[in-house]
Image (cartoon, rainbow, N blue to C red; front, top):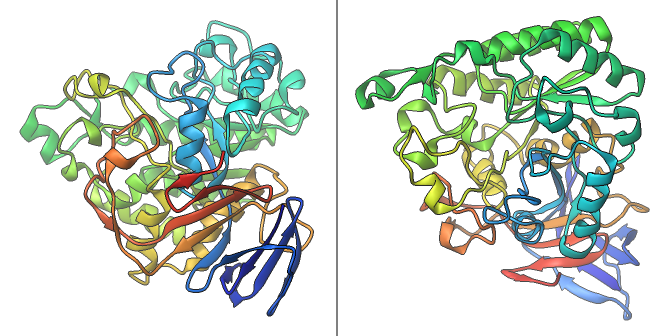
Length: 424
């Protein structure tokens, strides 16, 4: 298929109004006033064209938890949200801990997915510390990295062994940082709201202590280390120091940790792990994102069935959905408020996660695969959870108004989403 994107503003290191000609999945020409009678013209006047978003931390739930999400519904939600590449976590059933299981998963991806899907493998068999490390050598070319996401690796010796092996094969370890011995049954962050409601709470220590431990192990082993969903000012301080010393350390933050705090918690749709933190943590995260200490934004898209999520604060599972709302929320609350630029936002959603994962995805340039999204930055829309293509409706942002919703998503030159309709 041959497409001509006319009149749009391309977002890169700067913003330029150019036409884009796409043939057989590849960008073949970027120039002023391109004309091609053979191409299907897509009118982009008034819109911005950005490299497709890359979500390096999300959950597809399949296999094993298809009542929460499937490859089909999760990738539809991703396409609607402007994502062209997603990296699902391995905490499925069975756990993604062998080449055989991942190959079976990828066969289903080939038939059901409408965006690029590159999974993680677990660090240990079945996500259990009593089990051995997975065969990282065999899996390394198939996955983007190794993580026991959802379960912080409790044994320092195990994390040391994992990082030693990862360094030998030039792989990345991504970590959910949580020292379980310091949770004391907490499921929200400690504060006035938790005391008023009688909710069991935790401090910042479970996260920050494990980040500190892992950074030191990364320094000792020279391993690539990525901190998932960072949420505390203390952890930021540790990461900033690690980067200043030149360590191979990166980190991500979620939209909900940038926009909400623990006093906002109303019900189970505000329950996530790590929990919403204090106001000073929120502002530390925003500052760290702006100064480059935090590398990228990831959704930690975690869909749950409604009956599971409505069990009450203590019993409800952790997690919220985010694929269909992430960019509009950040654009509206950080870019439109002049805290950040559109170019910075595209760095956080597209360029930096692709760089961390060593993917050949970056700015829109001639010769590169046409993975892109077209954004409507001018018109306001209401976030309506009932319109989500994800099976999960568990979001605290239902009813929020936002700008910056994608109107078209293209993967390898194929239009997979166009203004509330899908072609995949």
